[in-house]
Image (cartoon, rainbow, N blue to C red; front, side, top):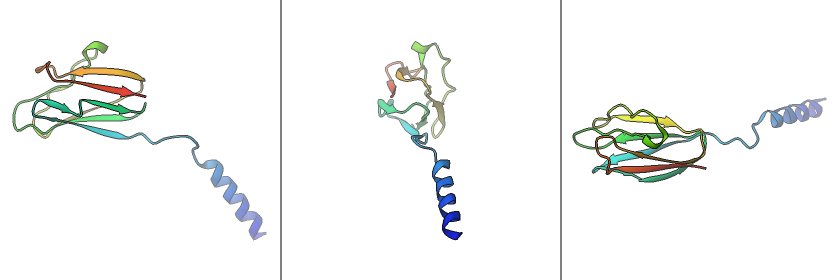
Length: 108
């Protein structure tokens, strides 16, 4: 009886495990020296990107202008902003006040 119960429990646990599901990750993009570091990142659908300012002064934003999305709230030193990506493809962005700062999120 004990062996049968253990076997049933093992089978039940096996089928309860999520097959083929990956856990979503959070990836950081640093804002430093008026650059997004790294400038280009590759993530999976469902992942979240956090932009964090490591500048000593001033502020930056993240703006997916080409997608028609609103600009992020200003990020002052040690502040951050995040966005979850569900759509595959390339998502270029700029810093609103400093358009020479560019980046790209590639969702695979």
